[in-house]
Image 1 (tube, rainbow, N blue to C red):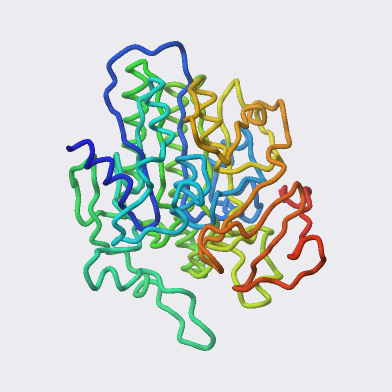
Image 2: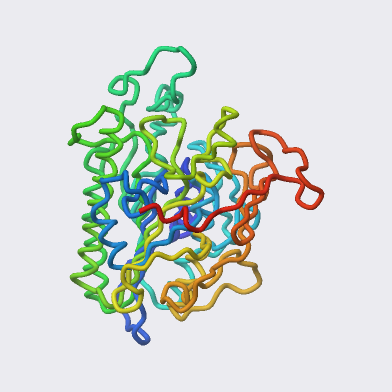
Length: 445
């Protein structure tokens, strides 16, 4: 009964869809052959331009930039959706929301989550002898839903901690007063509450400590492991303690980036000290920046979506414009992934599931279709193209949740719904907006 309750809890909790698999911390038994370890780090609301290696204006990601120079950087890498729940569910299942049933964000009051008949990446790897762990917004160590939600009672639930940008000539907001960080969230370890309310200012360091402990513990056991680290950064509120010299809003965001970068650096350093040659580290994001938060939102880099913004819309999170789903991505595996390589292959978060399964010498679940592909050949520098076609679903900007509204075909992208309505037919063949994407514009440094 306890095991069933745990499965339901992990599938059903959270506002931003931080849906995580069952975690097996039993480390007895022998490993069948030498299999690689996997560390998947997923940032929240991080813009493509927030990575210094992508965008020269960003100076806050020294550790990630170092990882890029020591591994492979992907400049045409895409989230499976432009908002949290669908994107994360797709990472865990390798399937778009229309297949796995998660097409919109969950709320604190949601009574369901990822359907129990879906098979997660962790469950596949457990069957292949892996120890699996999750650190982030849910289970094994984390908070039960997005940290901007507070409690389910009033006033916490009804007062988000960072209002949207002031409209028109309205009064400007006071970031210190209006963007508070006092949230009545519990911090869980397994099913036990270890702190409530959680101290958001120390949460990043707690995540780093738990992640490094997990890596050390499982490396000592001799069994391969999968560690999934779902970060709270760069979602608002941004609880940072040391602010650099800059306008307050940008100081907060820059300090948050530095804190996240330091957390990732600690995890990578632990991997390098304990299992460097046999651990594949994959860093990426769940969707683009939350433009409605103005100075507390990240950078889309060159993907400003001028056609959309000139009509009063956003080019970022929730939209199918490039800034909504094109995300930073890095791969690091000394001796396997080539050093200091920039890949222009068209790839997706959807590819993580089948690629990790293949590298783990495991088998994909039978009787279901997957939207991602095994991109091992791209990772190892033996192939370049990636996907020829990639679909992007509506994530709340306009139309039906989960509906496929945008399609990439090589260097072209077709939009079928924009700015809240269907666009007029621009030609008889496409019945949509076709835009060309120049490969050279990806690498801005």
